[in-house]
Length: 254
Image (cartoon, rainbow, N blue to C red; front, top):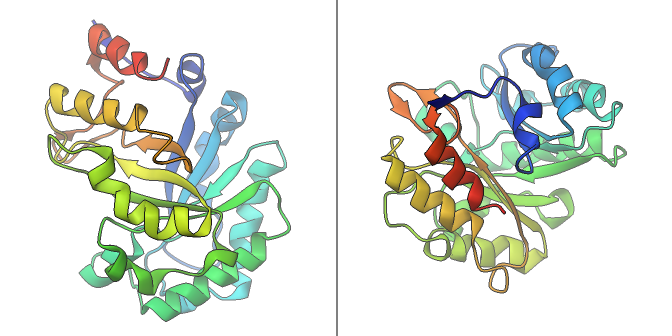
């Protein structure tokens, strides 16, 4: 028997739930229409909404105060209905900006200016937290992309580790360098087992995420799992999995 997940409301019955969705800025003005189809589900589920709003066909330098206000307006459609939003703006900026993918990108300084513009636009909305989330790298390499403690509410990292990885060896240095240093919430922005991985590898990693030592990592608040079948890689631990696998996964959070 395979488990299917039709809505967020179904999952929130069993485990605290957050909705992480991507919304690319492919043109201006920004309207956020990618989120229209899931708005009702998010509101009804009581989930935290974690929109990953990416500047793609626009550069960091294009995120002016006017565009930042457009982003704030889109998110206010959720917060006005009681939804808490963790804005994961330009996530993995340190990786995408240097890869020439769909990011038009820019320099770290241009990113920081864009980030601070968005921060200013949402600063008066108490239901929006700014979630800074680079891709896995050393603290030294990530440091140039740091907007500053006054502009960040949550620090996090995206990473898809190989089998046998531990929470402490993966996130310890980053946690110490940003979350602990500045007393910020730490949340894993996006994760899964590398290339999807085996059921055993996925279960081992989710166990690490669920049972991290909170005495060592007291700022650790949440993890978002990449619950997708993408490009032939099955990252899922709930949808499409056996009832036994789902039961084991959920047991880590009880």
